[in-house]
Length: 371
Ligand SMILES: *Cc1c(COP(=O)(O)O)cnc(C)c1O
Image (cartoon, rainbow, N blue to C red):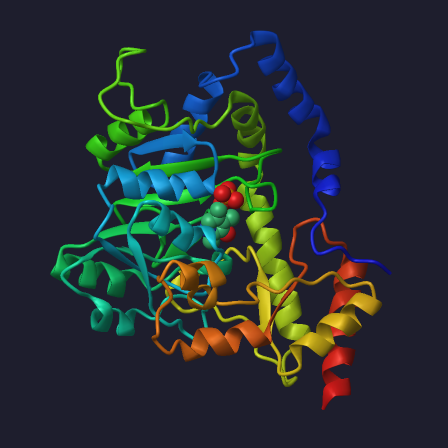
């Protein structure tokens, strides 16, 4: 049997008529840039996140970048974040001219360890950028208390966590801004790049809306500042509007897959993903920790089970940050340990029961062989 780590074809097949119709409508209307579907998606994502405004942008990376820019983060500033995330999280901080300051993670959630943050705050610190990694929310109450005490902005990287909640409240609604990605493999993915910033701050909303169209305001071709070209296109918005209707159903499926693996793999020498009592996990990834990770990767590949390593190298060790002089000398021991142990299994809603059985059995076999 062959179980890919993700299968986007199955999902398209099940939605083909609806999606084709939505695309055809855009092609007929030819309103390709900032058409009405973008506006509608902005409203619906904002409402899903329980915030006032959504601003569609070109991708999740730009969502982070424009949020930081919009808050005035730049040269001389420091932004506290996690080393255990996709590169874009820290890349956008550096691209603003600011310095990413990495704080180690919690072993059980893979998210930034809020208890360590204070130690890293300096006069230059302007913001905290937590990531809700793999779909599990970061400890937002603790982070917001620190942010308030030190007067820091909070920008949430929600790229992997759309629909996740912390104490019943959606991610993206805690900080000054929440940033989402609609990259095709995300829980809500388009058929190309896309992203969105959500916020309750009207001024920030206006600034980001301006930044995404070259810094122009309500009058086209009149510019108050330098901006970018970073818009969510109408075709993607139309596709995402169709898919958004299925998101909660898909999230439930992901959670059922996680429950299934949790049951089948319990009692084995493997650390299963945790769901804290404050969290509703949306399982963008189902990530286990095992001692002989690289051997297991090979063996699962031979068995036809698709797996991924998220992430093989913590960001504070990345060559580029070293060469820019941005690498921290902090010992980020938990992150460094996790990078050698993590293994993500297929967790998408379209997995069949036979595939699930096969993945669980294969993982079990590999684990037991190691002992
Ligand atoms: C995917 C992702 C991003 C970037 O999103 P893009 O749409 O690919 O630019 C940022 N942060 C995290 C944690 C991500 O997973």
